[in-house]
Length: 439
Image (cartoon, rainbow, N blue to C red; front, side, top):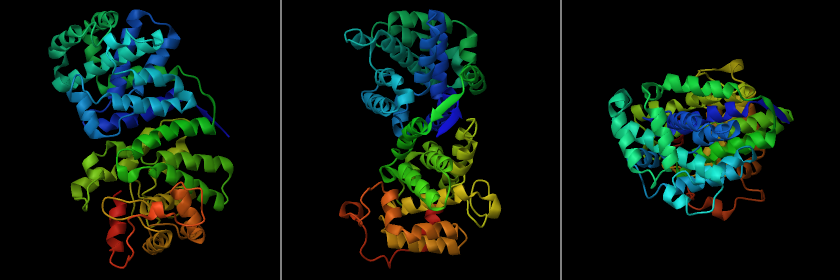
């Protein structure tokens, strides 16, 4: 199966998700890409290296899921724990063929120049990595001063960077930064509108071509992994939703291309959760009204990230609808009845099923028979499509194994049921369902 897409467009759109991790500092990856590109122009680097630099800069923090880690990266010029997200980003990119050539610069993007120059690395990887490191630290210093004060703070910021020439940063890259940063326009262009205009012009120069399903799935899998890593309670959630959605789609008679798109929607449906602070996702009690409001925007944020990608409009819509209800009482669009596509109904069922099969901060994981019973109650309340719930109910064990990414469907493995309560009669199922609606 082939998708007609512009991979630059996919990369740029998905960087929106990474930028959400900062919560109060949106656009970090894009600002780093802009500043690095301006330095590269000063150095007159070849076009191919320039394009690779922008892609690596946009995705350099793909190893960051936690808002706590992001705060360290913004608040501290040099942080001893920084290498962990570089290594994880490297591991994610290396296993994704369309983005694998970005893996090494991402791994090295917090390595000091005085270390790099003593090691045996590809010269282009070193230049890209250290330029990303330099501009990444410039953006961290900018965040500490506030966007409205950059023209006043630029000398102080530049002095900090100059002090690290030959230590953290290559002297010739520092010189390039100083050359471009003398212009007021360099700092004024760091606004959200200006950065978006700058990088969309670069995206538009990329070609649209056929990308096969496995390659596109590999890109989506990176971001599913990043989202699911935000909390230990959501590990493998997106992959489980994707696998079960595909299976239910095939049971419902959907064709192969539609099932491919449904699987992509499952992998990407929770992208918007990257904007949700860690403490809300991991809260052990009920969410208050403010926290529910923060949580409730995540599906729309998913839509805003994915919708601009040409060729994936249906994927964006289905992914964004995973909290819609047949009754029209869901969010964010309040679709109901015939306006709620079959694929979105399937995704909603798979999302609930997988979430109930996993442990959450507020409850134990549940076995297949209890999950099916809850799904039936949600059908009665107008939450889920009865026909799609019927498909998983008929194959409850197979659905459970698919949602939990287990190949052996011969039963419920003990390792996956550890911690399940023996007696479910004391569980408040209505409260549990209402809590799920906020997630």
